[in-house]
Length: 130
Image (cartoon, rainbow, N blue to C red):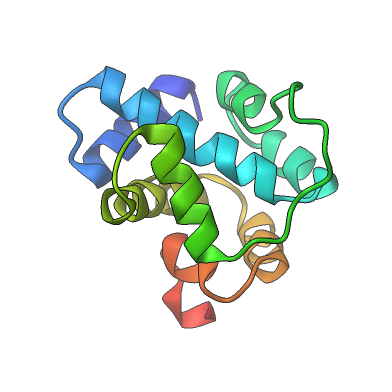
């Protein structure tokens, strides 16, 4: 999927008013996800994203191994990155991650969700896996 196609899907899912807001939100969520994932999982995911988004996910400035915080901390960090409150950041995360789940292969979605605590499944639009 091309970058503009991905962003259009996020914009529709999240009801964002313009392309700039959509890009800001997408980058906030994906950069935070990149911090959370173990490097191998982030690499596998990056392989299925448009190059521009893969670069956000795999920010070279963040060469630390993935961290292990749960959904609450993930949402807090998205809020910090996006400049929004946590309720809005949770909606951002759900919009971006549910589009992400529809974009990548089913096997990659399952691996990704199973590598994260149960609460993340809902953000990916797969509450049944929680």
